[in-house]
Image (cartoon, rainbow, N blue to C red):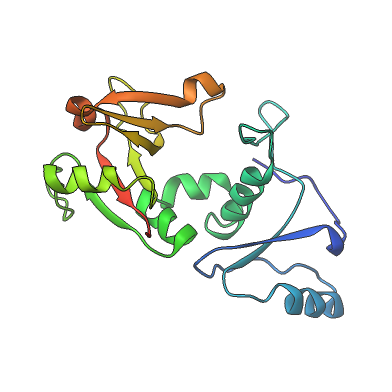
Length: 204
């Protein structure tokens, strides 16, 4: 991934604020302009970016994911996160950030447990009663599930948000799927541990 070359005017900058503070590159080589921009964007967790999105040089295509209503702001948040947490690359995010880490950066809070036993890991395997409680809270706090590479029912190595639960099923949404019809999946509760190995609960 690469960002199109500048220079960019400072009045086109956008600040995205996270719950953690990241080291970001200087916004200008001009001392007066850098000082003005620093004053404008010097808020805890603030990552300044331009509205220009990254380009995948392999396909010469803009790297972005629009919301279901066509909104572009999710891509701008993603770019700011790549700049701040990924040290200016999407590849940096892929190699260093786990589900709970990302949740803490975005919301300031995260609890993480495993749905299956992982030998040698310090995280506990979540008990059935606790799992049911967490999943039932999806309407009041974010609940995120992570799938393993060989998930039988959902896309492997993806992150899913819980958006519904009954006594026998869990409805999840995968924002990375390209078509709206593929994003929402209903998983039988009896098969949830086969399809997801991590669960993260955000703030309530």
